[in-house]
Length: 542
Image 1 (cartoon, helix red, strand yellow):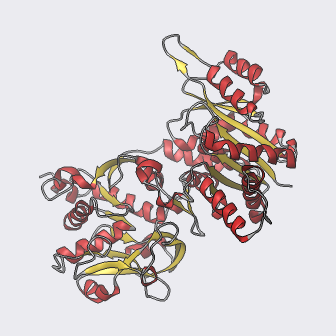
Image 2 (cartoon, rainbow, N blue to C red):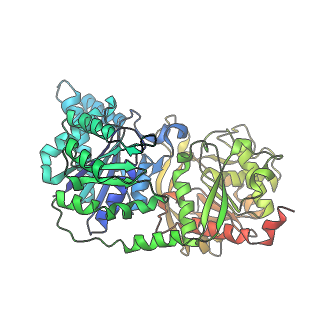
Image 3 (tube, rainbow, N blue to C red):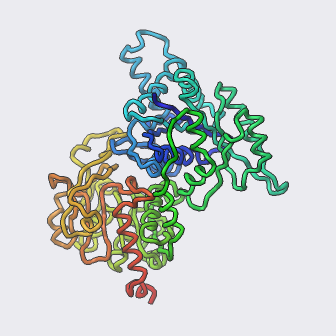
């Protein structure tokens, strides 16, 4: 029978529920168990796809094309399992499903209520991920903070799950903050006590409490939390802030976190093998030197808007034995007079995805700067489109070259809507989403990075390379190095006589793992490292 673990949070947001859930998933997987993970979010949006990056951070895309919360990226990176549309549920999606059922007459004229109809829909979703994946353990993170009004239907649903599957098949883990008051030089357990009291008032007694701390958890505080929160002393787990995110599973393993979870759920499994993870941490700890990468974007004020890109850059650094220092550059600040000051001391430039006209001219300027000065350039989604626009303007001489998204009146729309997107008026879930195959051209930078002829990568975009300009752009020297298997869609471009100048229409950052960097990020950081040591790099400062 599938076991269910629910991770809730209390006191404040941003405590690391997602990292706790992801770390536990990795530890359980190391013991031979099949793990599925999901996130239940209380906001009323149907999915994160139309939410502002400044408010919500990045939209993470799964293999099957679901637009999901960024925490799913942590799950995939830690657990190394592809998630799916059953891995993320919002209040909006719950009500959408229930109201559609009501319109179809599925409820036979019943009065539709939060209980049982909304809670039943949530429970059905929780159970479905276990059935679809045949998982031994389903780990479900509840978004928000205990006490939030909007979280109550989700908390009631998981309370009901615990009664339906039985307590030995269900485990509640509550992540709380234990603040340290420097003036009195002591940690405080009272916020945790109040949070647990709030949770118990909703009918949920946590089985384990994970305490986020900056200072070691004292025996006295551990005993106090155990006594007043009604959990066993060894079920109070310390979760310290670590210098490297990926140290979290090993720290929790040393606290016997997974041992206790297995005990409480009667999971008859032996010790896990985390040797690969330990080797990865050793590689991280043994890094020598560094490279500086300029991340040129529109949403750099919130770094979580590019979370997977930032993590993938670090993964590339792990495998090249260097630390990656990211310089967050707002594309609106870049122009012909500022570009040298902002980018000349960087060893590489990456342009990630985005939408809308704001900051586009700065991106085009950055792409051309890298092309002319042989600085490694990596364009992702919008970053690829920018590379094409920049090339059309500065090499082909098309001054009005642009994207149909930004300048529909342009005579040289080298990037334009896909034919299937004409007439689409709704925004959510209507782009090219999820995994698509790509055929790689031999003897290219793409082929050198991947070392295979056909790949599969995840997409999230509406506009494509315009084939009307394909021949003349190729004739001018830009190589189309990857296409759809039919050859119809341009998926990647590059410049051959350049240390590294690659643009990809897809999002490779979603498939990068800390113990297995994505080939393109590995190659990009390698090129940046080589550029840092080159004469070309020194010439920029003469």
